[in-house]
Length: 131
Image 1 (spheres, rainbow, N blue to C red):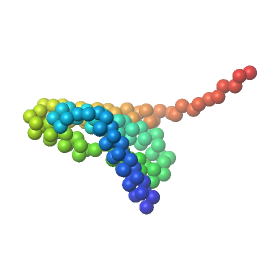
Image 2 (cartoon, rainbow, N blue to C red):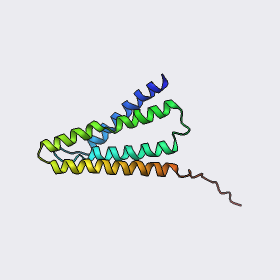
Image 3 (cartoon, helix red, strand yellow):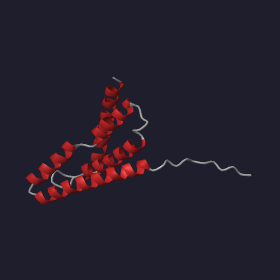
Image 4 (tube, one colour):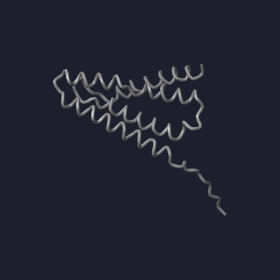
């Protein structure tokens, strides 16, 4: 039950965050969907990092709340598809294809980068003592 509540809360927060960023990065229905692209790339990077760094020691409820909840609500496949269909219906088929290619390639690259960064040893802060 805690995992379900975590997904619910995370989903609400992730969806609200996506909507807020979508409002900040304004684009029209037949222009390049930059907001959705940026959101999905950032989400891919974050999830890759968290899987490598946090997942091995995180409790199940936290993984559920942050993964499918927060980042699942933040990133969205359906928004990608709606953007592509809208572009294609507006006669911008090549732009729709470019958007799909960028989404897949940059999303994959961001996830791989997140995994790589997350697997690096964490920097441990040291305190220097003045003598």
